[in-house]
Length: 95
Image (cartoon, rainbow, N blue to C red; front, side, top):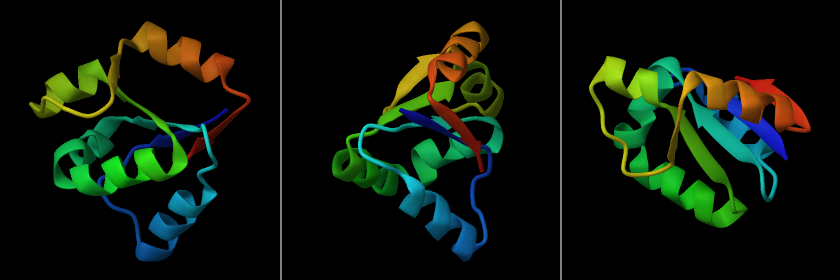
């Protein structure tokens, strides 16, 4: 499993397309920092990616609190759980 760590709400279109295309079946996506806003602004896009690629979606609980959002998609991680999932991934890709 590759862990794709997304930290921005939006990337230039070529980078946005690249990271989405890089997703493989069974990969995981972690929303952190400003990317937590994707949980509401791009809910449908994330939902479609999860279904099409059988992804696991995670987000940092501390970032959700900092940005005042309550995601209805994905699993909240503490900072300690973030470290654990990062270390357990076969590869980590930060976008």
